[in-house]
Image (cartoon, rainbow over the protein chains, first blue to last red):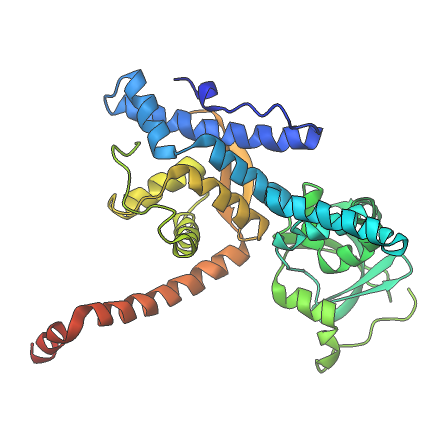
Length: 233
Length: 128
């Protein structure tokens, strides 16, 4: 049995992104099965025996593939049906709440909370469309993340999360960066001192829950020695 | 190498225990260097002397979930056989989790060991 024989057919996956995610999962699972088959051959099994042993050890490919897809989309199919059903009820129930049934709401209902809730900055305040961030007890203008202009990251967040784009940028930067295909575990940030204009790049800023909570709940205000952010930049 | 027979740990036996244990073993398998999924299964098998094993396919949803939770990062690279493969590595968050899990595991193992040893074994240990 060749690796391609392990790959299940899923003709109902419509969008390019879906196809891309599914293709990567298929490639990853096929690699595993091929490697296991090769090890079986190296251990003296013939081709059919090696294929059978690899397949037996792996388990049902389509089940594991579907589980990976559910992780990728943050929900089980049942939850997706619930979300769609609930949105439909909202729309039908009231013209007022129909306005709430946006794609953003669907995403929220659809398991958005699976993403890591971590952040890199202990404080984040907005001055117009410019984010000020607290790093090492000093306020900086955040200019770039991973070399991308902040405007680009924010525009992406607003395109994906619509009216909650800025809030998502502030509170769920990990998810925003991941959805752009950028690293989210640590951050390379280009920062400008708003007082003297000096620019610094901080590499490998750790993202963690403490920083996110501090920024989200304004906990930095309770710490001694931390200045208030400048009112104008 | 593929296991010749199925393991005694079936996913349906205790899914919560399995999930927590599997995540912990994945973190430990990546402690020294990045590995692809197949490498992780081999590492777990090797480190456990072949005793511990899970259905290999169940590793992948766990890996993808751990990436999403920020415990691991994933990157496509080239395998030892010159094939494209997805490699996983610990993130700082994952490394911190591994450290905590290891500490908790030692406490848990000692506690369960104490219960399982029974009075006779403990008396024997006390008189030895």
